[in-house]
Length: 505
Image (cartoon, rainbow, N blue to C red):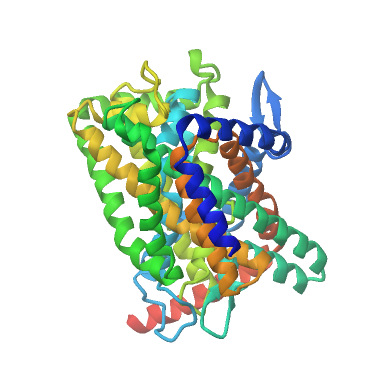
């Protein structure tokens, strides 16, 4: 009853007259502002270095990537061939516990990270920090591969499988169970609960409202702009997207995995081929672009862009928003993999930042630089980042803005369906695993899709960003604390893989 009431309320809010919706938005923003201010003042607190404000959480995440990469002796580079063999199922058995294959788990996790952060996020980063951002984004993607390996190994190690064969996993489980094993059960319980709360908020915000809101903004731009039919009836698109999302998430992780397993390769291929076409038309500019990216990444003061420090900050920040390494979201999807060796899925997970950041984000960055679109175009745009990308792709042909919209839609849709699973797992950890709890979350999530299409809630987005980064605090504490467990599982899987490789000759 409560869930139906909430969904009806969201739909009514989305379909209300514009003047009333604006008043409601102002009321929500005013009421929410103190909470947002508190979140930003704590999670997004900055330290000033050489006149530049640096969010402390950026260093927190960067340090984790570097420390873990050194600790595991560059497993992110050495184990890429092993990861590919594992994804193909070489080291798996049909009767291994879990719900989905290695590939399906990887596709589901990639669908949650490959979103508008790969397009608009990269463009915003370049506009703020200059072309040097792309270099640090690239580096962040590589060190993030090790962080993903570590957290996703723990995700499988401490997952729970109920009597129906349904997997429940994620940072909240390895925080609770891992700390309990070492006599710190109370601390682990607190950290797990804090993580789950932040994950639910992030699923409603960055994993939902932001995705659909910016997709609608791009749709408005290609269908007549402000004042057009779509601009005046955004809720219709939101309602349609909610129905489409609902049809997928009702099936749980198996349904999500089936869709993402087909959707992710296709959407990545469309975007990469489009980017390669743009780069092909500007092939003579590529060497100059690479030189500019590298030089500005190491120039202490690079004109108006701020130089090395600003480029590093925005590169790390946009990479984290894009690939979510260290956030603790991916272990929720990877925990469902069919395997008896936890580190096998950790090895598979390291491919995720490689696809998301090293390939797709780098493609976006190169397209922006070779076409000269490193600052927002003049005009009133709902999303300057998407406008920069749209302008870059349109240098080939004006019709490319429609291909970009297709990419934006697919990226946003894939993020929606995967983050619905992340949020539901965290919701059930807090409120229980009953069918009523599950349906309550799903209906609220779908309701937020309609709200996100019809309204622009800047404070909600800021709070979502803070919630996303807040997830990294308990998650990385858990990863550090459980490093011996990860190392043991990694060595165990390597022995397992060597034995099978030896048999195959």
